[in-house]
Image 1 (cartoon, rainbow, N blue to C red):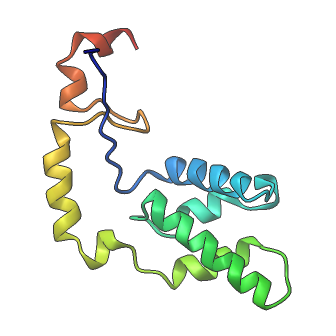
Image 2 (image 1 turned 135 degrees about the vertical axis):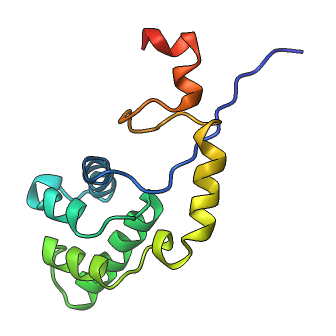
Length: 127
């Protein structure tokens, strides 16, 4: 029997810089050059969005653009973002409970801070 390694990924909402990177990646995935969009405006439009919510806002925006026979634009994305309430607001109790659970059990994904689990593990000191 071989030993294995498993990582649990936990991500709720990110910083504006993190949201900007998510938009960049998701736009590239859909063959939309990110340099055609104001990523700073998109990332700063609304806090509390998770990566999955950003993905869904992008998908809804693509449908809107298609329905109006237009190319996807920053304005269409911003309209969709403004019309969406993230789960971190509508169901704040559940994400906060998950954050408390994850605080000592997971690694901070965007590298903005060391989690207690990272700070107490010498393996992370070299990273």
